[in-house]
Image (cartoon, rainbow, N blue to C red; front, top):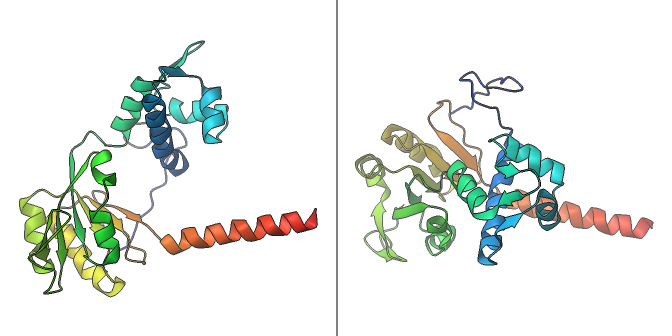
Length: 230
């Protein structure tokens, strides 16, 4: 499968909606997380300056980001925390009722099955899939484990929206083709390889844990080097 990049107008996409950069989209979950913390602290409103100090993002950047979606703030008042949290929740699709399956019941798949992360973000996990005889037919953290041969039919019948891929990379392509035929719209890919979709109605998010670790190593190395040069 091959990804096709589309050129976008600087201000609007072809359908007339505001264009939003990937950088802004990647910051939305951070806003969501910090606003959730503020709600737990019973904070009713917050200024862009206060939010800036919490998040390490400039107040100007926060205003620019939120203006991509209408602003949500009032001059002299700031932002209503619960209202902004609700609006960002809508933007992030946490109110869509997405249904997910986890493919691969190894260590990573089991770890993801055991977390409450999905439900806290509005995604319901309904099943897992694997090929190991000792795993198929069991339950992992309350999720039934089916054989991967049943994946396509299950996803189609149960209207699965998201597939979490934790299989070895040599198995990933065939599974992705099954997901595509079943109409699954989103693939969260941990298979340690790049997967791309040539169709507009299928979204792939590639996760490379090793890349994040190397980014950390890079920052540590350069911080140490900067300290030695002082």
